[in-house]
Image (cartoon, rainbow, N blue to C red; front, side, top):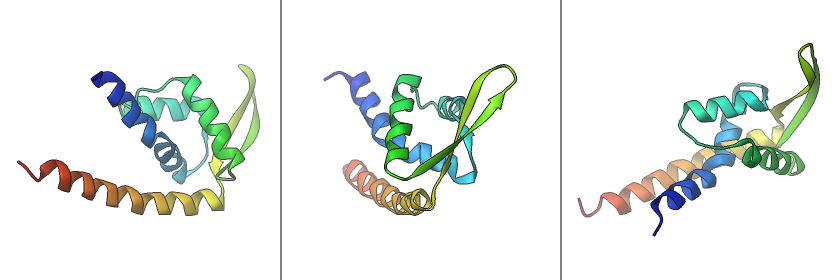
Length: 110
């Protein structure tokens, strides 16, 4: 078993939840999302985040707006839609249940 692969898959599994959580306080530019994830030790690359943002947008969980930039191309800022806020609330409950379940299983023999 490749432990690094397992760790990467675990991070990938919660990435959608993390992105929605970051956006709960307001809109963000993709590099802001990446920086927040990096600061939290969620090692992700742009090539992973961009398709995920597109999928979340297509699912109606995110919207975006373009803003002109004085130092380059226009920037796309993402924010949660009402549907995204509802989904995040549901995922919050699911996450709490998952933490409790995994803790129960992994701590039972200690």
